[in-house]
Length: 100
Image (cartoon, rainbow, N blue to C red; front, top):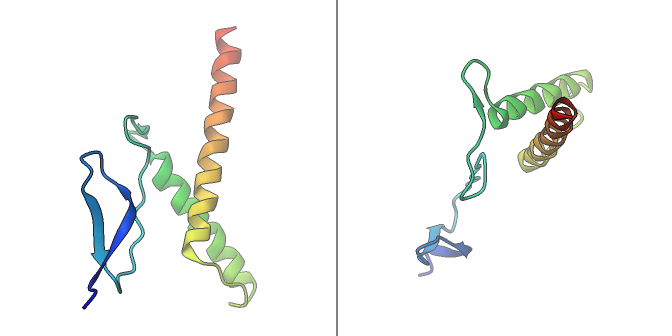
């Protein structure tokens, strides 16, 4: 009986990650290993802020379309990733202009 599937990616200590074959899992990380994620003490992290924003935007579109437009959750995560990347680029540009 094949009860587990082994993930292609491995941890730093080379132990493969496994989960039940029937599991529906999405793991979301605010940053990649070796880096820190930004978290504003008042507003929270960019990841959570953007995730909530994308969900709210999708809900507005979904309600306006009378429940005709559907979207997979992982597509929302792609939008979150793009929004965070765009935000980081804008912040770097602003910071560089300020430093000049």
